[in-house]
Amino acid sequence: MKRRELLRYTAYMTGWAVSAPVASALLAGCKRDEAVAAGEAVYAPGFFNEEEYRFITKLSDTMIPTTDTPGALDVGVPEMVDKMVGQVYDEEARNNFRKGLKELMRRMDADETAGPFSDMDSEQSLVYLQDQDLHYKNPDTEWDTVPEVEGNARNVYFDLKSQIVGAWFNSEPIGTEVLAYLPVPGEYIPCGDLQELTGGVAWAI
Image (spheres, rainbow, N blue to C red):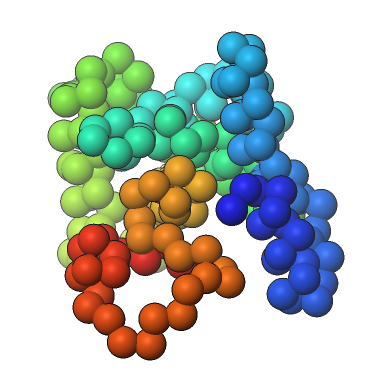
């Protein structure tokens, strides 16, 4: 199903019009597909500045690189994050996100042991993010008592991680080409072997 069709079916199934910000975030993918087909520049961020967007792009590529399946950059994940924060978050949430993002970027580029995250190659950045995960998930740290700036950086880290993974799983190429996808309406099979029906992969929806 194309994104434009998704908007129409979403409005029909819920009985409500899709909000303009959400529609804009979804249609960003349409514009990206059209730009790629025309050989044009793919995307210019509307909310993040160049440095912030470059950081989010590197973070996305490190978390979900291109392998035998499309990576985060192949399906336009950074664009979706930019649209989500810039057009779906309210003003207070956007401001808090930006403050936390700036602190997260500062910390990840000021690491005396690993060096700047922005200068790391793919293998180094993956190992570094695994260390960051362990740091921010540490159950022995009383996160409610840490300085606010550190707490904000931690919150944005997990917010970004959630958005990157969610945008990847919900992208059209992953939903239709990687996961098991059954268009609706489609053939009704009341009884069947799940492995045979899906090829052993999870359902897209």
